[in-house]
Structure formats: C-alpha cells, structure tokens
Length: 119
Image (cartoon, rainbow, N blue to C red; front, side, top):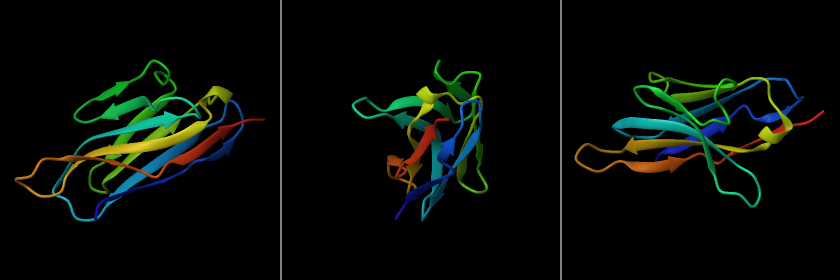
C-alpha cells in the first residue's frame, strides 16, 4: 500500500518560516509529479506548487514558497518563508505514482498538516 506522510506543520508567527515534508512509502515503481496544495474551510483545495522535471508555482506562493524533492528519499518539501495569517490552512501533498510497470499511475494524497500563522 502506498502512503504519503506529511510533517512539519504547526503554529508560527507572521513573518516566520516553516518547512513541510512529505515522504512516499510502500511498494511502487515510479513517482512522477509531486505537489503541495492547501485548503481552508469552505474553500476548494488550492494548488501551491508542483514539481516534476521543473517547478511551477501559483501566484499566491510565488516568491515566498519553494518546492523541492529528494528522489532518493521519495520526499517532497515545501519551504515557506515570510508567512502571513492568510496562509493559515491545512496543507496537503500530492503525488502521481505508478505502482507497477504496465499499469496506469494514480493520484495519492497525504493526510494533511495544519499550518497556523498567528501572533
């Protein structure tokens, strides 16, 4: 069974930084795209950044957030700097994973980690 396990969320003051991590575990053949999303109550899940061969950022995260990945560790990171109260949300990681060769890849999600930006 494939799982994405996130860590690194918590409470931070405005202007502070956090680094989220998400590690894929289980048996699989390949990981393609990985990404970070966030969601606030009553709103749709919002894409923040995606990484495959290159990186793409949403306007809301451009310049403050940096996505990176360690393929050897099957881990994706999100470095968040200059955090603002409006960044408060549940953050989810995503991965497009192929479990076995010869079968299509599937979408996987982490369980979510709460980030709260408040003084």
